[in-house]
Amino acid sequence: MGAGDQALDYVLTARRLHSIRTAAKTHDLHPKRLRRILTDAGFITETDLPDFEVIFDADEAQGILEQASGSVAFSTAQKRLGMTRSQMETFIRNGILKPGEGGDQARPRFT
Image 1: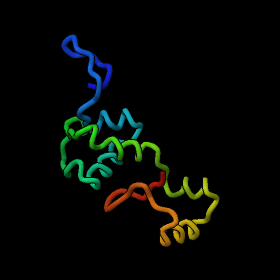
Image 2: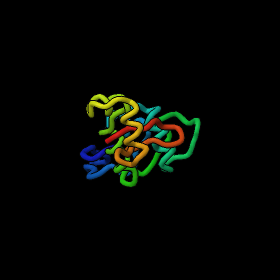
Image 3: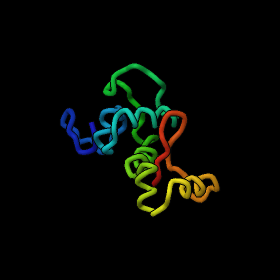
Image 4: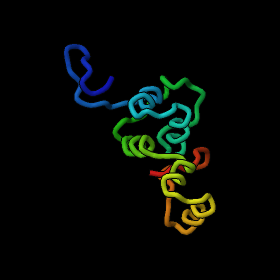
């Protein structure tokens, strides 16, 4: 349940827990991608549980959820910046551009 929802005649003021499913819906992210991001960030462990059963702290993960929801893929960033693939790779290699997320399993994305 999220902020503003009513439970037992009490209106909740903030969300304390998220599941992969609720976070994906709230932040407009694909659940598979979100699972990889949260696993890489250490908020959840790898598991075969369904998305609605994987629970994590909403406050702790808020930053990474916001970053992920506002990020764009490599190809979109390349088009927006008007660069070729080799130019983008050169900028990344030299630390001028830094992916906002990505890791062992997630592809690089830019904020």
